[in-house]
Length: 210
Image (tube, rainbow, N blue to C red):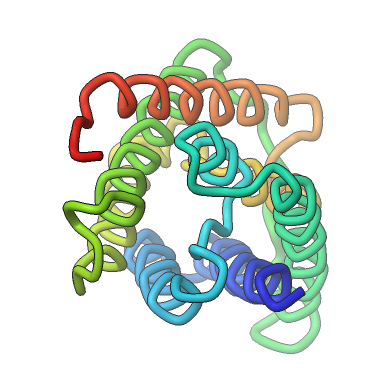
């Protein structure tokens, strides 16, 4: 149960930061998002592995570092946290803070968004697998920085195209908050899970440390 609680908390703060920063932090939003992910990875990594992302959970399972029984519970905890964070983020933006209104969602360009989500998610999962799941990097102190900076860099690179989710839980959260059209969520789900699976397959091909 402790692992699922940690996954809920980490995902909650990640999605809450996405909703609030994307609607109030301007060009600094990717830094805020990458930073909260970094600190939550450091906070929860020793308990749950700090996935906070169903695509990461899939890849870590394929890599052999997550028990099959944990996969559905991790994903449920992540998705429930994302929805809760979206509702609270909407409340804070609309009623408690400066009365910031979330702008109406516009449709995503399909093919560019797929490429953006695939590239960003692949980079994220690739870094997670190499820095946080291998014997050769076990006990390192930089894995949280590596993961957080990957999200920051990819958010700057691809965020204007697809919204820069790289995470089905984040996609669920921004759809719930009205930042992305619900009809476009398939772009994130297919791209993110597909890229994560590809990263796991290629990781197992190139990594020979075990």
